[in-house]
Image 1: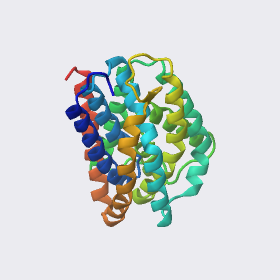
Image 2: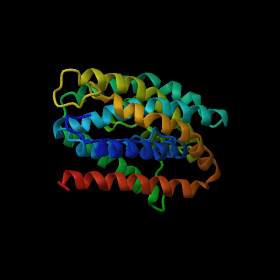
Image 3: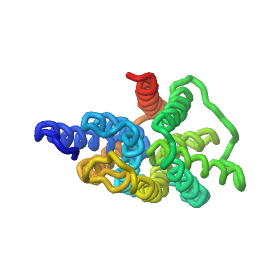
Length: 276
Protein backbone atom coordinates (compact mmCIF):
# COMPACT_ATOMS: atom_id res chain seq x y z
CA UNK A 1 0.00 0.00 0.00
CA UNK A 2 1.17 3.57 0.61
CA UNK A 3 4.77 4.21 1.61
CA UNK A 4 5.32 4.53 5.34
CA UNK A 5 2.35 2.38 6.35
CA UNK A 6 3.06 0.30 9.46
CA UNK A 7 2.67 -3.46 9.68
CA UNK A 8 -0.07 -3.02 12.26
CA UNK A 9 -2.03 -0.65 10.01
CA UNK A 10 -1.74 -3.03 7.08
CA UNK A 11 -2.94 -5.96 9.21
CA UNK A 12 -5.94 -3.84 10.26
CA UNK A 13 -6.59 -3.03 6.59
CA UNK A 14 -6.42 -6.73 5.63
CA UNK A 15 -8.65 -7.94 8.49
CA UNK A 16 -11.20 -5.20 7.77
CA UNK A 17 -11.34 -6.21 4.12
CA UNK A 18 -11.81 -9.88 5.00
CA UNK A 19 -14.61 -9.10 7.48
CA UNK A 20 -16.36 -6.78 5.03
CA UNK A 21 -15.94 -9.41 2.32
CA UNK A 22 -17.72 -12.01 4.42
CA UNK A 23 -20.65 -9.68 5.10
CA UNK A 24 -20.77 -8.62 1.45
CA UNK A 25 -21.04 -12.22 0.30
CA UNK A 26 -24.03 -12.80 2.57
CA UNK A 27 -25.69 -9.59 1.35
CA UNK A 28 -25.05 -10.60 -2.26
CA UNK A 29 -27.00 -13.78 -1.74
CA UNK A 30 -29.78 -12.27 0.38
CA UNK A 31 -30.46 -9.24 -1.79
CA UNK A 32 -29.33 -10.47 -5.23
CA UNK A 33 -26.72 -7.70 -5.41
CA UNK A 34 -22.99 -7.78 -5.84
CA UNK A 35 -22.60 -6.02 -2.51
CA UNK A 36 -21.30 -2.75 -3.96
CA UNK A 37 -23.50 -0.62 -1.74
CA UNK A 38 -21.52 -2.03 1.18
CA UNK A 39 -18.14 -2.38 -0.55
CA UNK A 40 -17.86 1.23 -1.73
CA UNK A 41 -18.38 2.90 1.68
CA UNK A 42 -16.06 0.38 3.36
CA UNK A 43 -13.32 0.86 0.78
CA UNK A 44 -13.78 4.63 0.88
CA UNK A 45 -13.12 4.67 4.62
CA UNK A 46 -10.24 2.21 4.43
CA UNK A 47 -8.56 4.11 1.60
CA UNK A 48 -8.96 7.27 3.68
CA UNK A 49 -7.26 5.48 6.58
CA UNK A 50 -4.44 4.45 4.24
CA UNK A 51 -3.89 8.05 3.08
CA UNK A 52 -5.32 7.90 -0.45
CA UNK A 53 -6.06 11.46 -1.70
CA UNK A 54 -9.71 12.58 -1.74
CA UNK A 55 -9.74 13.30 -5.48
CA UNK A 56 -9.08 9.65 -6.42
CA UNK A 57 -10.46 7.88 -3.34
CA UNK A 58 -14.10 7.64 -4.45
CA UNK A 59 -13.50 6.44 -8.05
CA UNK A 60 -10.89 4.00 -6.71
CA UNK A 61 -13.47 2.61 -4.27
CA UNK A 62 -16.08 2.37 -7.04
CA UNK A 63 -13.75 0.71 -9.56
CA UNK A 64 -12.41 -1.75 -7.01
CA UNK A 65 -15.97 -2.54 -5.95
CA UNK A 66 -16.96 -3.41 -9.51
CA UNK A 67 -13.95 -5.73 -9.80
CA UNK A 68 -14.78 -7.42 -6.48
CA UNK A 69 -18.40 -7.85 -7.55
CA UNK A 70 -17.45 -10.02 -10.55
CA UNK A 71 -16.87 -13.35 -8.73
CA UNK A 72 -19.47 -12.58 -6.06
CA UNK A 73 -22.17 -11.88 -8.64
CA UNK A 74 -21.31 -15.00 -10.62
CA UNK A 75 -21.52 -17.16 -7.50
CA UNK A 76 -24.80 -15.55 -6.40
CA UNK A 77 -26.31 -15.85 -9.90
CA UNK A 78 -25.40 -19.53 -10.23
CA UNK A 79 -26.92 -20.29 -6.82
CA UNK A 80 -30.17 -18.44 -7.60
CA UNK A 81 -30.40 -19.98 -11.08
CA UNK A 82 -30.05 -23.45 -9.59
CA UNK A 83 -33.25 -22.74 -7.68
CA UNK A 84 -35.04 -21.80 -10.92
CA UNK A 85 -35.79 -18.26 -9.75
CA UNK A 86 -33.98 -16.25 -12.47
CA UNK A 87 -36.06 -14.75 -15.31
CA UNK A 88 -33.73 -15.04 -18.30
CA UNK A 89 -36.17 -13.09 -20.50
CA UNK A 90 -35.48 -9.94 -18.48
CA UNK A 91 -31.73 -10.47 -18.53
CA UNK A 92 -31.73 -10.88 -22.32
CA UNK A 93 -33.83 -7.72 -22.77
CA UNK A 94 -31.55 -5.63 -20.56
CA UNK A 95 -28.15 -7.07 -21.44
CA UNK A 96 -27.14 -4.82 -24.38
CA UNK A 97 -28.56 -1.47 -23.17
CA UNK A 98 -27.17 -2.09 -19.69
CA UNK A 99 -23.65 -2.71 -21.02
CA UNK A 100 -23.90 0.47 -23.10
CA UNK A 101 -24.98 2.34 -19.97
CA UNK A 102 -22.05 0.91 -18.00
CA UNK A 103 -19.63 2.12 -20.69
CA UNK A 104 -21.14 5.61 -20.55
CA UNK A 105 -21.00 5.66 -16.75
CA UNK A 106 -17.38 4.50 -16.71
CA UNK A 107 -16.45 7.25 -19.17
CA UNK A 108 -18.17 9.86 -16.99
CA UNK A 109 -16.26 8.57 -13.97
CA UNK A 110 -12.99 9.77 -15.49
CA UNK A 111 -14.08 13.41 -15.19
CA UNK A 112 -16.72 13.46 -12.43
CA UNK A 113 -15.80 14.96 -9.02
CA UNK A 114 -16.20 12.74 -5.92
CA UNK A 115 -19.44 14.43 -4.86
CA UNK A 116 -21.19 13.16 -8.00
CA UNK A 117 -20.62 9.54 -6.97
CA UNK A 118 -21.94 10.26 -3.48
CA UNK A 119 -25.04 12.07 -4.74
CA UNK A 120 -25.91 9.14 -7.00
CA UNK A 121 -25.56 6.85 -4.00
CA UNK A 122 -27.84 9.01 -1.86
CA UNK A 123 -30.50 9.37 -4.56
CA UNK A 124 -30.79 5.73 -5.58
CA UNK A 125 -30.31 4.16 -2.14
CA UNK A 126 -32.66 6.65 -0.50
CA UNK A 127 -35.37 6.15 -3.13
CA UNK A 128 -35.15 2.40 -2.85
CA UNK A 129 -35.18 2.46 0.95
CA UNK A 130 -38.22 4.75 1.18
CA UNK A 131 -40.19 2.49 -1.15
CA UNK A 132 -39.27 -0.72 0.64
CA UNK A 133 -39.78 0.58 4.17
CA UNK A 134 -43.08 2.34 3.44
CA UNK A 135 -46.29 0.43 4.01
CA UNK A 136 -47.30 0.76 0.37
CA UNK A 137 -46.46 -0.57 -3.06
CA UNK A 138 -45.45 1.50 -6.06
CA UNK A 139 -46.78 0.15 -9.32
CA UNK A 140 -46.08 1.39 -12.83
CA UNK A 141 -47.85 -1.52 -14.50
CA UNK A 142 -48.96 -5.11 -14.21
CA UNK A 143 -45.91 -6.42 -16.05
CA UNK A 144 -42.63 -5.16 -17.43
CA UNK A 145 -42.89 -3.16 -20.69
CA UNK A 146 -41.36 -4.12 -23.99
CA UNK A 147 -39.51 -2.10 -26.61
CA UNK A 148 -37.98 1.38 -26.07
CA UNK A 149 -39.03 1.83 -22.44
CA UNK A 150 -37.43 -1.47 -21.43
CA UNK A 151 -34.29 -0.44 -23.30
CA UNK A 152 -34.29 2.92 -21.50
CA UNK A 153 -34.52 1.18 -18.13
CA UNK A 154 -31.50 -0.93 -19.06
CA UNK A 155 -29.49 2.18 -19.95
CA UNK A 156 -30.41 3.88 -16.67
CA UNK A 157 -29.47 0.79 -14.67
CA UNK A 158 -26.11 0.61 -16.45
CA UNK A 159 -25.15 4.29 -16.03
CA UNK A 160 -26.16 4.60 -12.38
CA UNK A 161 -24.66 1.23 -11.44
CA UNK A 162 -21.32 2.22 -12.97
CA UNK A 163 -21.29 5.51 -11.02
CA UNK A 164 -22.28 3.75 -7.77
CA UNK A 165 -19.95 0.77 -8.10
CA UNK A 166 -22.81 -1.69 -7.68
CA UNK A 167 -23.94 -4.74 -9.59
CA UNK A 168 -27.30 -3.16 -10.36
CA UNK A 169 -29.24 -5.25 -7.86
CA UNK A 170 -30.95 -2.32 -6.16
CA UNK A 171 -31.98 -0.74 -9.44
CA UNK A 172 -33.07 -3.82 -11.36
CA UNK A 173 -34.95 -5.16 -8.32
CA UNK A 174 -36.70 -1.81 -7.96
CA UNK A 175 -37.81 -1.70 -11.59
CA UNK A 176 -39.04 -5.29 -11.48
CA UNK A 177 -41.11 -4.75 -8.34
CA UNK A 178 -42.53 -1.56 -9.89
CA UNK A 179 -44.04 -3.89 -12.48
CA UNK A 180 -45.53 -6.43 -10.10
CA UNK A 181 -42.70 -8.96 -10.07
CA UNK A 182 -42.32 -10.88 -6.77
CA UNK A 183 -39.42 -9.73 -4.60
CA UNK A 184 -37.77 -13.18 -4.59
CA UNK A 185 -37.79 -13.31 -8.41
CA UNK A 186 -36.54 -9.72 -8.59
CA UNK A 187 -33.67 -10.49 -6.20
CA UNK A 188 -32.70 -13.66 -8.07
CA UNK A 189 -32.80 -12.05 -11.52
CA UNK A 190 -30.80 -9.07 -10.23
CA UNK A 191 -27.96 -11.43 -9.42
CA UNK A 192 -27.62 -12.10 -13.15
CA UNK A 193 -27.59 -8.37 -13.87
CA UNK A 194 -24.59 -8.08 -11.56
CA UNK A 195 -22.55 -10.26 -13.88
CA UNK A 196 -23.47 -8.13 -16.90
CA UNK A 197 -22.61 -4.87 -15.13
CA UNK A 198 -19.50 -5.72 -13.11
CA UNK A 199 -17.21 -7.03 -15.88
CA UNK A 200 -17.39 -4.09 -18.34
CA UNK A 201 -17.61 -1.69 -15.38
CA UNK A 202 -14.36 -2.91 -13.84
CA UNK A 203 -12.60 -2.76 -17.19
CA UNK A 204 -13.91 0.77 -17.76
CA UNK A 205 -12.61 2.03 -14.41
CA UNK A 206 -9.29 0.32 -14.93
CA UNK A 207 -8.84 2.25 -18.19
CA UNK A 208 -10.28 5.51 -16.83
CA UNK A 209 -7.65 5.75 -14.09
CA UNK A 210 -4.54 4.61 -15.92
CA UNK A 211 -2.88 8.04 -16.01
CA UNK A 212 -4.18 9.33 -12.67
CA UNK A 213 -1.77 10.29 -9.88
CA UNK A 214 -2.13 9.62 -6.16
CA UNK A 215 -3.29 6.03 -6.55
CA UNK A 216 -1.80 3.56 -4.04
CA UNK A 217 0.74 0.92 -5.10
CA UNK A 218 -0.93 -2.27 -6.21
CA UNK A 219 -3.53 -0.41 -8.26
CA UNK A 220 -4.19 -0.62 -11.98
CA UNK A 221 -6.15 2.46 -12.91
CA UNK A 222 -9.08 2.85 -10.53
CA UNK A 223 -8.89 -0.80 -9.42
CA UNK A 224 -6.94 -1.77 -6.30
CA UNK A 225 -5.56 -5.24 -6.93
CA UNK A 226 -4.66 -5.51 -3.23
CA UNK A 227 -8.26 -4.80 -2.27
CA UNK A 228 -9.54 -7.24 -4.87
CA UNK A 229 -7.28 -10.09 -3.72
CA UNK A 230 -8.07 -9.59 -0.04
CA UNK A 231 -11.80 -8.96 -0.40
CA UNK A 232 -13.16 -11.13 -3.21
CA UNK A 233 -12.36 -14.71 -2.05
CA UNK A 234 -14.17 -14.33 1.28
CA UNK A 235 -17.26 -12.77 -0.31
CA UNK A 236 -17.50 -15.59 -2.86
CA UNK A 237 -17.28 -18.16 -0.07
CA UNK A 238 -20.16 -16.64 1.94
CA UNK A 239 -22.55 -15.79 -0.96
CA UNK A 240 -24.41 -19.17 -0.93
CA UNK A 241 -25.26 -18.64 2.75
CA UNK A 242 -27.07 -15.45 1.78
CA UNK A 243 -29.00 -17.27 -0.95
CA UNK A 244 -30.28 -19.78 1.61
CA UNK A 245 -31.36 -16.93 3.89
CA UNK A 246 -33.14 -15.13 1.05
CA UNK A 247 -35.30 -18.12 0.14
CA UNK A 248 -36.09 -18.82 3.79
CA UNK A 249 -37.25 -15.27 4.63
CA UNK A 250 -40.85 -14.01 4.16
CA UNK A 251 -41.37 -11.41 1.44
CA UNK A 252 -42.01 -8.47 3.80
CA UNK A 253 -39.07 -9.34 6.03
CA UNK A 254 -36.77 -9.40 3.02
CA UNK A 255 -38.09 -6.04 1.80
CA UNK A 256 -37.63 -4.39 5.19
CA UNK A 257 -34.13 -5.77 5.64
CA UNK A 258 -33.17 -4.53 2.19
CA UNK A 259 -34.70 -1.11 2.90
CA UNK A 260 -32.86 -0.65 6.20
CA UNK A 261 -29.61 -1.66 4.55
CA UNK A 262 -30.05 0.90 1.75
CA UNK A 263 -31.12 3.62 4.17
CA UNK A 264 -27.94 3.18 6.18
CA UNK A 265 -25.87 3.54 3.02
CA UNK A 266 -27.77 6.66 2.01
CA UNK A 267 -27.33 8.30 5.43
CA UNK A 268 -23.63 7.48 5.46
CA UNK A 269 -23.00 9.41 2.25
CA UNK A 270 -25.18 12.33 3.31
CA UNK A 271 -22.85 12.72 6.29
CA UNK A 272 -19.84 12.39 4.00
CA UNK A 273 -21.11 15.15 1.70
CA UNK A 274 -21.69 17.33 4.78
CA UNK A 275 -18.06 16.85 5.77
CA UNK A 276 -18.38 14.28 8.55
